[in-house]
Structures are given as C-alpha cells and as structure tokens.
Length: 110
Figure 1 (cartoon, rainbow, N blue to C red):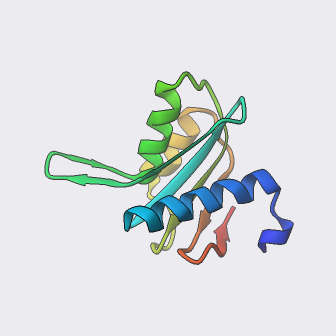
Figure 2 (tube, helix red, strand yellow; figure 1 turned 90 degrees about the horizontal axis):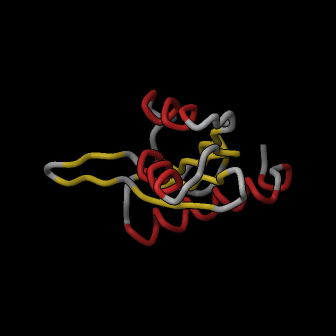
Figure 3 (cartoon, rainbow, N blue to C red; figure 1 turned 135 degrees about the vertical axis):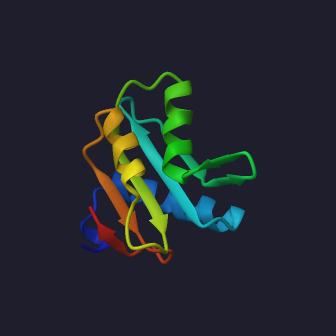
C-alpha cells in the first residue's frame, strides 16, 4: 500500500511518528489519533528504571488527556512488526487500525 492510497489522516500519523523518531534519534516513533481527531506522538522510553514502547507512551498520553477511544495508531520502526504488548495497548482503547511503517515511511502492515 502506498502513501497515495492511505487516508490523509492515517498518512498524517505516520508522518508524525517518523518525525518524532528522527527528531529524538529513537528506535521507535508512534502516533495515535483519538475519537475526537486529536493526535499524540511519542518515542520509546529507555531509562534504567522505566522501559516503554513508543505506542505505550502515545496511548498513555492520549488517555491522560481524556481520550476514551482510538481511531488509529501508527508505529515507525526498523523491527519486523509491533510487539504483542503494542497490539494489546492499542486494542485496550478499541483501536482496530495499527499501521506499521519502516523508518523511510514505507507502510509494511495495516
């Protein structure tokens, strides 16, 4: 699937995830869109006492801002796909759509 066949709002969260990943020099970048259309982007956290994936951070940001549901989520990573924990955290808020793209933005999974 190319960017031209993606919904513009889905493409937007991939771009946000790529941008924050590049800006922070992180292994992963993620962005989610809640039921009101608000977006949240984050990178993974790798501290000695705290490890969170980028999707876990983005979902936590959404929830702490009052989101009750997700319309879509995007993960940009060099890994083959999302970890099971990432799939579960998106589903916790009813998210059915998890887009996974490589660092160059090429969609690998939707």
